Image (tube, rainbow, N blue to C red; front, side, top):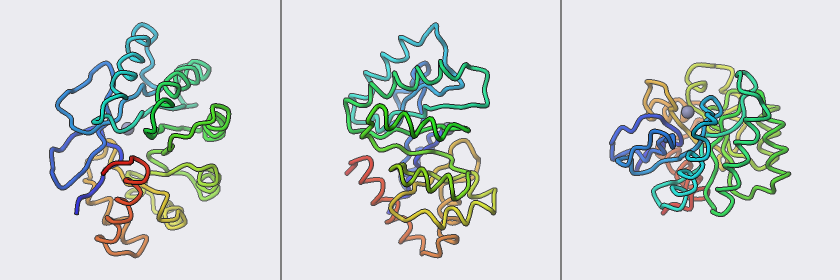
Amino acid sequence: MEFINLHTHSYTKDDAILEVVNQYPWEFDEAIPNYSIGIHPWYIDENRLKSDLNIIEEKLRLNECLALGECGLDKRIEIPFQKQTEVFQQQIELVQNTSKPIILHCVASFQEVISIKKEMNIKNPMIIHGFSKNKQVAKSLLDNGFYLSFGKYLLRNPELSEVFEYVTNDRFFLETDTIEDTIIDVYQKASNIKNIKLEDLKEVVKVNFNQVFKYE
Ligand SMILES: [Zn+2]
């Protein structure tokens, strides 16, 4: 059975992996079979914003476009937070016509993302990618219906093991994002921490994926 990589920036062409490859509207690659598409807050550019949003809207109608994202909020960058919020909300409006999930980049903005979910009454599943925070932040996100995706920090940061253990099996995903390690490395680490067999872990992630992505 296959591995599922919730978020990656490189397409490996490996048949044993179902990968949600991150795509940007301004450098779209037609050759990628399964992808998410969104405007990352780091790369907001007023000059092409309208065209970026149009491309996202168009791709979201296609079956091979599995999700919106990565998009979200980041308090550690120069781009004004107000602008980021605006662009984030414009993208959400586009995905709300569909049942597709949202893959989120969220840095020091968890409360804001929770508020936006409530204010905009977002029913699409929302997944925080690259989760690296403590149990308290995890709990607040889980209580508000979010999913958490783990990768880089699960491999690099021993304190995160306890948080990952705490997340129930129905609410997490695994990913590589931009790291060199493979998704199999991430699964192996995750299976050690949760103390479940690799085959069982694959099943757990697959069930979550089918649930959230309605992909079968
Ligand atoms: Zn990423």
